Structure formats: structure tokens, C-alpha cells
Amino acid sequence: MTILIEQPERGLQAVDKKVPSETRELVLDGGFVVPENTNNAGFFVPESNSFGHSFRDYEAESERKESVEEFYRLNHINQSYDFVKRMREEYGKLNRVEMSIWECCELLNDVVDESDPDLDEPQIEHLLQTAEAIRKDYPDEDWLHLTGLIHDLGKVLLLPSFGGLPQWAVVGDTHPLGCAFDESIVHHKYFKDNPDYNNPAYNTKNGIYTEGCGLNNVMISWGHDDYMYLVAKENKTTLPSAGLFIIRYHSFYPLHKSGAYKHLMNEEDAENLKWLQIFNKYDLYSKSKVRVDVEKVKPYYQSLIDKYFPAKLRW
Ligand SMILES: O[C@H]1[C@H](O)[C@@H](O)[C@H](O)[C@@H](O)[C@H]1O
Ligand SMILES: [Fe+2]
Ligand SMILES: [Fe+2]
Image 1 (cartoon, rainbow, N blue to C red):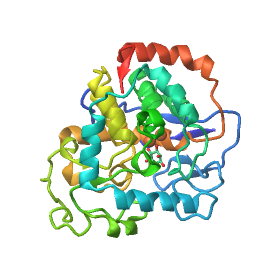
Image 2 (cartoon, helix red, strand yellow):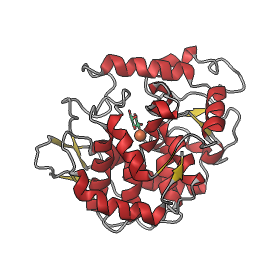
Image 3 (cartoon, rainbow, N blue to C red):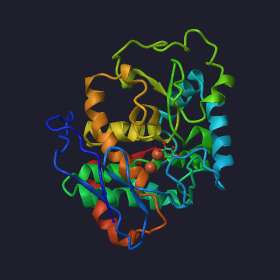
């Protein structure tokens, strides 16, 4: 089957990487049939996830509904400004493990994400499904294939050797701290028990920030996105800034799906956001039960790792 992907506007460019203007298709051709549908912008998207529900439907009755809601309750209560600040400082030291990118991919074999209503496969499958789907549609953007492969590697924070953080501190959608919690955030009602909720310094539209200050200056809830961004940056990756932006903000659905918090972006963020929106279709709609042959694709991804990363990284 073929899925048509939303078109970025013609003539607009990302900072390092020009957003291509020709039509791209998300092809999920694993030899299985997925019901398809046309969204209101005229693009084909799969109608249902592996459980037969629509994607990111947090209200649909399913075997995962209750546990996902409980996940967000804990996430919203515990992720405070102070918590995030402490985690960034602590994990910014990168003094836990030394290993290659591929070794980290293999560790994800043992990780299942409890926040995700659409997928219960080991995470390594999701990485390869995302990367391979992008590769089919954007064959020349090798940096974007690699970004797909590594975007969720930060989920190793769940493993004991990385501190064994609870799920609410690793996965799920992200949102800013230090300003009001936007209503578009999944299960928003649980924020009322967050210590920042009634703090007048943090609960206005701008909070501690100024308009256009740039997302780099905004504290985002702690998890696999920001951690992997820190790992990539501190280990001196040569990925373009759009790749780092995707890794850092791919769970920031309130921004890239709902358009909340756009007033905090600067010009560079606005350019990079176009790539993130392309990426998101692959991250979300490539989730399926179809397995990728790891050994077959490994040499290709290893060549990209060698191009953009050192052999060993500090984690
Ligand atoms: O449940 C999912 C999952 O944890 C993804 O890795 C993350 O990027 C999404 O934003 C989240 O909703
Ligand atoms: Fe993610
Ligand atoms: Fe993902």
C-alpha cells in the first residue's frame, strides 16, 4: 500500500537541509493489508494500529487504555521544573556507559514502551521500521534514515545500567515546564497535582520565558528525547541541526501536532519543525507487526553510523 505524505510548502528551506518539494510517499509494503483512509488534508494514512484502533486514540477502549492513562497520570504529577533540571544535570555528565550506536540499538531489544497505545513490539523493530520507511521515500537523505534509527535510543534509560528510571521519566509525549500546561497535552487533567500547577511563576502563557526565545532555552519534560539529544551533541555527531531537532522534539506532540507553544520558537526552530513534521508520519504510521530483517539492513546502517558518529560514545 502507499500512503501520501503531507507536502511542505514549496520554496521553504530547513536551516542545513532543504526540505524537498516534490511529492513523497510513505510505503508500507511488508506484504500485509492495512485499512487505509484519507485525512481531511487529502493524504492517505493507515486507519488503525496493531490493535485495530486509530492511532494515538487515548480514549479508545483497548487492553492498553488503562495502563497508558496511569502512565500519563504519573508523568504529569512527577515531571516538575525542578525534576527536569536535576535530570538534565545528572545525565548531562554522560558517565554511565561507553558503547557504540549499534550496541545501543541491540539493548533496545529488551525495552517495551508502556506509554504507547499503538505498539507493543520490542523497540528495535520500531527503530528499523521507521528508518526503512523513510529510506524508501527519501533515498538521498541518509542523515534522516539514521535519525530514524536512533531517535528512540534514549529509552535505554529504563535499563538498570542507566539508572533504571521509571517509565514516566523516559517515554510518552513531552511538554515544556516553566510555563502553563497546554490543554492539548494528553490527559491534561492530571497536572492539577503537579507542584508547578499553582506556582504563579510557572503557570502563565509565557511563564519564565519570552516570546521567540527559542526552544533551546525552554525546559522540556525529561525523557528519551532530550537524553539522546545530549548524547548525540556531546559526542560530537555531525548530523545536521534538523536531525538533532527531530531527536530532541519528536515526542513534543503539543507543538508539532497541535501547534501549541509556537510563540516560544525562533526562526531556526520554525525551519527545523518542517522536517520534524515529515519525520513524524514515519515514526507514527510505520508502527506495525511486520518485522524487518535486522542482519540484512545492518551493513547499511553501520555505514551511516560510521559517517555521523564516533565508534564509541559516552552515555
Ligand atoms: O508513546 C509514545 C512513545 O513513547 C514515543 O517514543 C514517543 O516519541 C511518543 O511521543 C509517545 O507518545
Ligand atoms: Fe520516541
Ligand atoms: Fe519512535
